[in-house]
Length: 119
Image (cartoon, rainbow, N blue to C red; front, side):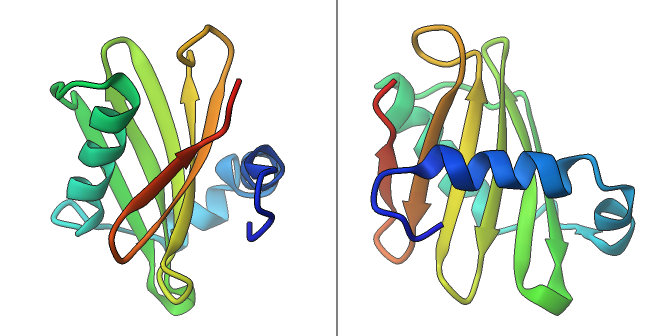
């Protein structure tokens, strides 16, 4: 996750290890009023270069580990994300990406720096 430019490695690890893990979802609590809602909106706006409506935002909190994860849909795209509260850092995957395929990026707080990987 801390690697300066290989965000895809962290994103793929999340997908392989956790995204299909029923136990992770069972232990996580929905957090519909999460501070991440605004963060996700800013990521999508930055990625598109313009504001857009987020169709569905699902944020889950695994409070024991201070870990957030979930999905967002917008403009026929899906974004999967994860965020580590103690590190104030997260990653995201957008399908389809800006050039088809997948876009992968990292964001951190405070100040919300968004650093999408070049695809």
